[in-house]
Amino acid sequence: MPGIALLLMPFMAQTIRISTMPTENKMEKEIEVKFDVPIDRPLKDLWEECSGIVLSNRFNLVSSKDVTRRFDYFDTPDLEIYRKGETLRKISGFDPNEDRAVFRYDFKIGPIEDRYEVKHWTNRKFSIEKILDSFGLRKFYQHISTSASANTSHWKRQFALGSNLVEASLDIFNVAQGARFCELELELEQGDPDQLRRIADLVCDQLSLQTVNIQKYARVVESMPKYFGLIG
Image (tube, rainbow, N blue to C red; front, side, top):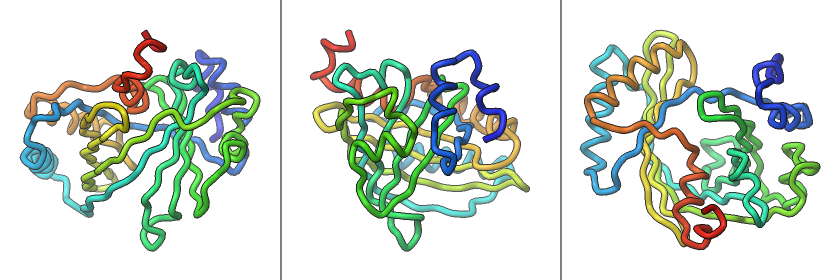
């Protein structure tokens, strides 16, 4: 993406990583707002209330689906990727008849308010070496393995208002050897960020939710007792 290194100049180590990525990988900026949902809250009621707020503000529902996925995260033995606020993961469970492939590998970098990601779709599982090479990470991380896994459910709806497209997703994570947590995410797929902020403020106020300022991988790691001594 042109100019991405300039955008991330305050984060020099991150800029270096971006510059070493294979040219076929496109780095995209995430524009989203996330809320923590107490796991004992009635999720179906909250989901319908959220949708009602969006629809009452002139958006139209354009698609709806519920999916299940498996998330596998990769890190070094001392959790370097976690410590740097990055994410390296594989997502399984896509339908090749509806999606681009069976698996998707993602690398995310940057603070949550200035977060970028790159995705790699494939129909085969990658070796550790292939994962690192796909994102130009071999010079930064040599010894990685699966650090955490989660079975997930996602309720997704897309809403449109003119040229603005917002995806709402209720994400339920069941972390292996960890805890269960839930987030409501509003992401701008295209259009004006002000429209996303407007809707997010309404959802936050009317549903009495708290924003989440850390990535899911951090929540996954911090829910796992085996890492408590390592991360303090």
